[in-house]
Image (cartoon, rainbow, N blue to C red; front, side, top):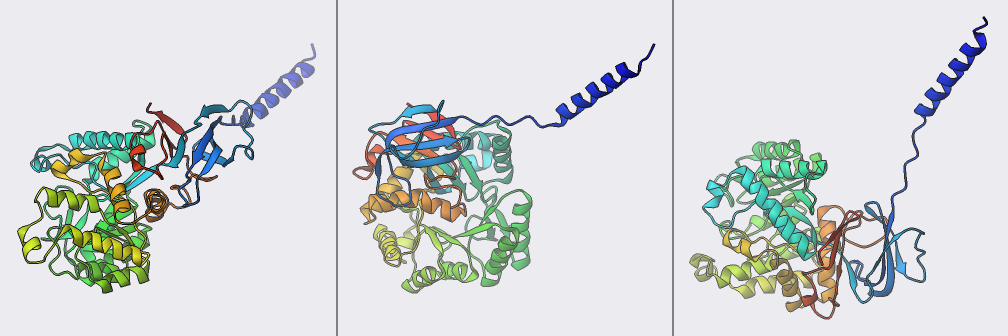
Amino acid sequence: MNFKPKCFLLIMAFLLLTVSLSIPEEKKEEGVIAFVGGTLIDGTGASPISNTVVLVQGEKIKAVGPANQIKIPEGAKRIDVSGKYLLPGFIDLHIHVTFPYSEIQYHTDSLSLKTLRAVHVMEMMLRTGVTSVRDVGAPVEPMQALLSAQKLGYIDTIRLFSCGGLITTTGGHGDGVPGNIAVDGPWEFRKAVREMAKAGFRHIKISPTYTLEEAKAAVDEANIQGMKITSHGGGLSDTIPTSMTRIAVEAGVACIEHLNEMDDDILDLIAKKGVYIVPTLAAYRELYKAKEISRYLIEKRHWTVSMHETLFKKARDRKIVMGIGTDVVDHFMELYPGIYLTEMKYYVELGASPMETIVAATKIGALILGLADELGTIEAGKLADLQVISGDPLKSFDSLGHPEIVMIGGKIHQLK
């Protein structure tokens, strides 16, 4: 019997099977979601556009524009948002998501409980329309757990950008708070930044009191590591001497947290160097209301609510770029999530326009995070982080804070 034809056919069949298995299967194109008919406030500062279409495919925005200019693909999932407003998701640049609701809990809570509380706070922020937060000081382990859980899909919530442990000096602002790192000297500052980079964080925060050499070392190492660096620029326990903010700016930090007790020449230097500011105004007003500003600062240094407000106006006059951050801690944590909207309303109260404030909460937030190419505005190619609200926020911010839809990275979190 001649087996050659049969062998040849078997060999050919095997080769065809091998080739077919080696050809990668064509990836199925992701479906498109179309938000149809809403008024768009895109976060860039441009005038609102009525009757728009926003197309989302996968995690990104595919197309944006007037309804008569955007073709909706066949089979797209349509969401009618006629009569409603589309905005980018808000960004909180100064938050401590693990912080407890009372001072004693700093020392009694486990790291596990801190982690779970962070998830709770992040979920509250999501329901307000906040889609990204920068945590500027927390224990390393909970931050690592949260970031890993998000990456693995164990939790599905807002974007978290963490500084890890706040870096201060022995006796400096924040020394003694669990999770913070107290170091001394330029090399220790440099090593602490390296440790936070090794732990997986891409942002860093330093806190006074420090020398110029220490702050410069931290800035230099952050730049080497590709990290964004910010500094505490005032507060309740670190304003002696008042030169700390100047040192931070001269050292080259990208951002200053808080607006207090700052001479005009320091504001001039901030403007000249293009340093950002996160004022956290509402947090200070709450501290004054609760009489938790020290008598020394009030009686000897003449601190008042108007001091912070005047500095905000001076910063605006100098066109210093400012983002939105909250920074309420301890029992003030009970003010979340509404404190974010309180901060926005405070901006308007002090002379910023509603549009300027919305830009601060969106586009400027992304700029300060170093992610202006990815976040902060509703534009083609950006990550699809957006919210749908029922009322016109340019007429009243009362329409903010209870969005009907929040989308993060193309995934809808239906709230109402």
